[in-house]
Image (cartoon, one colour):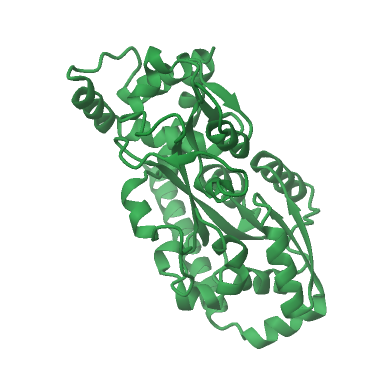
Length: 371
């Protein structure tokens, strides 16, 4: 009993300490003199950013022109970025000062919780981005949709995502490899979390109850999807082009690729559109997040760059395109796109805690079922 009480007291003390540290951090950030930070950033003269999106290069040029601070920008894949940040942090040689990263589940488990990355809310975010997008700080959301070839299909060819598991569509749909695309695994976790909805959607469409061999309807869908001979690709660009290329007799269907690829319809002469009526969702969305290195070599320049990125000018390389949506209230959506509210109602996202718990299970089901 004495040991139990000691453990309880120790746990309470740790919680109190964590709250105090958080309070101090928030207080310090609230007391920052922004003019002094900008001046110190210019003294530092440079900043290094790792990003999963190539648009960071355009943003870097805009930032350099605005502040005269050199940006060393690197575009990396999700896996490369995570591995590099971990390696640099564990060896005590952090080269990056700031990152733009996807896959919240992996980022939080491998980079934030171990203390390699820290969340920072710059003045622009405090003023114009609602608090619910602060932890972690959202740069923007990206949507992935189901696409089809409009030259061959005059109507949407699929009404329900369960049809991707039917023999009719075996080998006739493309998916970006879930084993290199963490957000696909996160989306699959939402399919598992909503297993009751998936089962109900199946029964409504086929008129009979779903028979499962897995633990739930979500895992059953993932198994059947993998068993139906998907064409596994390594690029959203390749999927959208393969789906939309004209002159095909039997073009593939795209099982979720980034909607921003529809910007290429005109200049690449693609016959491409997304499915607006498919059930139970039109696809899914995921976030781009801004985080600072815990041991940044140029901490002030990193703060100024973070502030710039979430503002209208810094976000312009993304805002100039469809399919990417800022949560900054001063950034308008693309005129050829729909407002974020339209997509938020029709797309699924995921719960990072549930995704972390389910990832190994989902990966196992996919790997043992894929042909």
